Image (cartoon, rainbow, N blue to C red; front, side):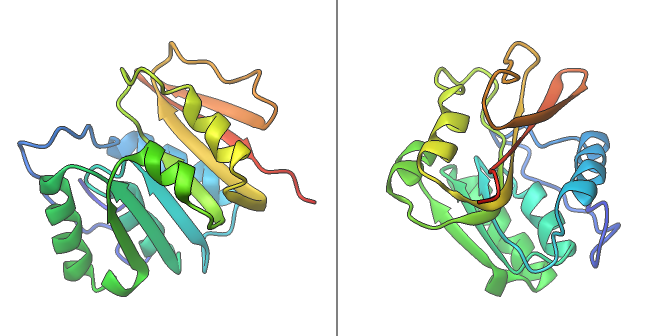
Amino acid sequence: MRIIGGEFSGRRFNPPTNTPARPTTDVAKEALFNILDNLIDLDGIKALELFAGTGSISYELASRGAAEITLIERDPGNLTFIKKTAAALGITDRFNIVRGDVFKFLQKNTEQYDFIFADPPYALENIDDIPMLIFEKKLLVPGGIFVQEHAPRNDYQKHPNFIRMKNYGSTVFTFFKQPSE
């Protein structure tokens, strides 16, 4: 796992081998951030990573200047890795690491974010509820971007906030936008 761009570009980390996470590949992550560069200025943003896994997306966001990043993850091994890596990068002050269930977090959270990324397990039974909850709970600021990583079998093109979809083989990124008020 490596950081693709920004301040920590090229830094490599070895995630735990016994993790249940399926880290986003470097190729897919690079493509994701190339698209994001045209959609949102990441410098100084407030971001949320759901199903954070090893925290790969959050390190990339921090490397590109995100000011505040909340990570939701429930696996203790992944949480230990995230804390260790954030400390090694010197970014613990920008990370709010929450151990817990994503759906419970989404139900209770009252904060808004400029950018939200979700990488749920592809076989998650209620995966299609995530975009609905994000917009129902008004978790994005006006103009905010939400990206969900998922398998090709999930299709969100009919969602009212859908803006684009990019397919990278077994990985698909669907982009949503909160309308500006």
